[in-house]
Length: 211
Image (cartoon, rainbow, N blue to C red; front, side, top):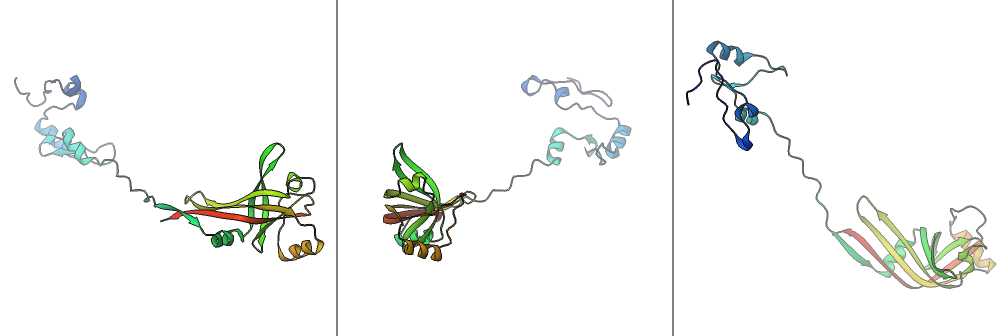
């Protein structure tokens, strides 16, 4: 095949996937005066067209010059976690903060689980409710109680489960002592003058935390 001279296009040879050279990167030899002009001709981006010596830049030259996508910075390493069993003392320490827990009991319609505001005194759990609620109706029975604290962002938290007997506090002196000792204000509106005490018979807990 005869080589192309200055100002003449190279013959198009089939390339990868059946594409001709013109489809991939059209090139032709430049005449000497064209080489001088092309070497310093401003590009669209305000720079200069790239040439290599006295020949036009090849696609390999451009690929080497154009920076590829920056390597993404590695994300934070996933911290290993461990699920640890809590001792009864640790469980009570966590419950003593008070807050919101859930009381589980068996009603006529089946097992119920209702949220309550609670406080802890003397290793017992106290909550308040209204006289016409299910919690008051089924207060004197075996119950379960659960409280927890979870951190969704850190994937950490703890949970404490109590099994025990619940009963309404009916003694006026005992109620006054509870009112004086505890800052227990239910979130739910209305009069909630029934104090219920849960006496634990079993307590257990677990915490998930970084190892």
